[in-house]
Image (cartoon, helix red, strand yellow):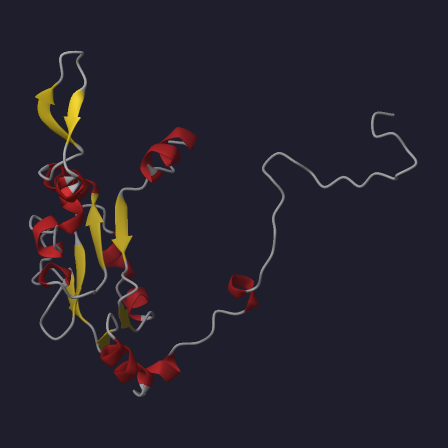
Length: 184
């Protein structure tokens, strides 16, 4: 959907590369800056490796993929069931699948979805992380908090963490005096 909206704004705004980061894995955010060229390359996928494992192995390491990879992901997801069976009723509508059988792709593992992505180590598109913590369980999160690496991460500052409200799109803040009619 984001691609569709961006393309609607301008052909130059449409993305040609996508980066995935998981909230259940934490690693040095500065590492991405060192490999910016490889990550940005629109023709090659890029992946991080930690302890010899990548996102294809179920590790929550980040990776970047191309438009071609996105097409393959869509095909893979479409292998799952939707919400309807192939059976139609007399009036033309389709029969619904039982709830537990609907949208089976939501249970696909990362290795199944990422099967066709190629992280090529020889060309530098697979890089080892200096440190990585899998924080999907309390034990891993606790290990991260007791490590030296937690000190490397800094608070993002009030710009990202304070509450603020924005005007609605296309609406300016106009203050009216109670005594004056806004139509005048």
